[in-house]
Image 1: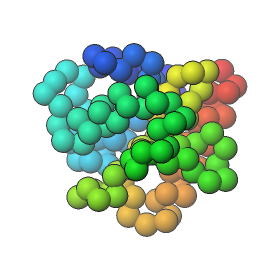
Image 2: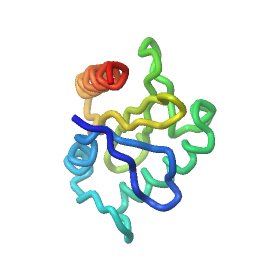
Image 3: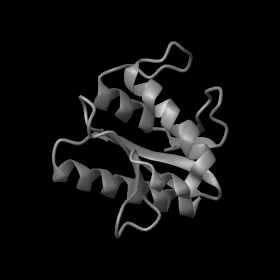
Image 4: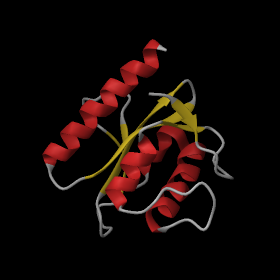
Length: 128
């Protein structure tokens, strides 16, 4: 597992655990692209990340972001009204946004597995 900088114009202080691109691709059934034109779900994620970089913790005041109750420093990007209910779990670590995991939420079990993965990855971050 590695930490990778998201190298997209306009996204300056966001990183992802190396598995995230593969998980995102699997969840949305679209390839992750490093250059435009962006596909539907990645385009929306990039827009959300631009807002998140500016707002940080205050982003939870917006409907597409939430702080997960009882989960410490764990947050979610969500769009439940979209055709696919994609979740991206992240934390804010040393002033940077760290994308921890992405998954398609179909039921509560999916969310619980996503939280478990995110918590393991946060522990990895803290130990490195």
